[in-house]
Amino acid sequence: MTITSRLAAAALASLFLAGTALAQTTAPAPKTKTDAATQTEKKAPKQRSAESLTCSKQADEKGLHGKERKKFHSKCMKTAKAGGTEKAK
Image (cartoon, rainbow, N blue to C red; front, top):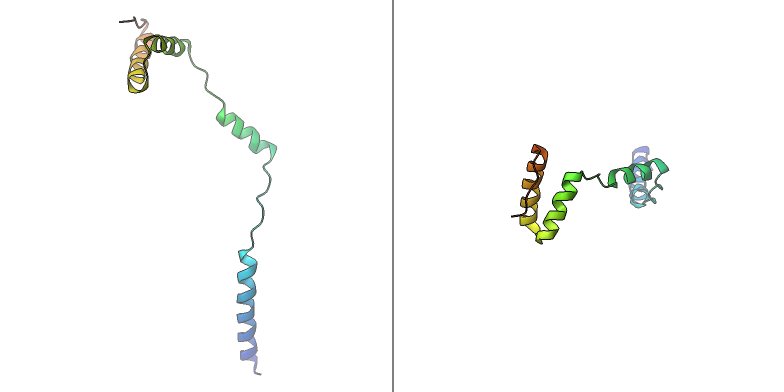
């Protein structure tokens, strides 16, 4: 056997072996405490303002849901920030 045929056979064998080695997967590394702390910080609910809570209570009293509730809440927040309060109509 010549050197080139031996090199070709070795290259072909390495391709077969590399294919199976690359197909193997490893388990993901466990998350560190810093990753867990970062995720809980991201998922922490935002504090709602007093105006927002008041507007939500008014929307509940009116029985508003969906787009109507969103529209009412938006209008209520604008008037609350301007210094007035949204009156029940």
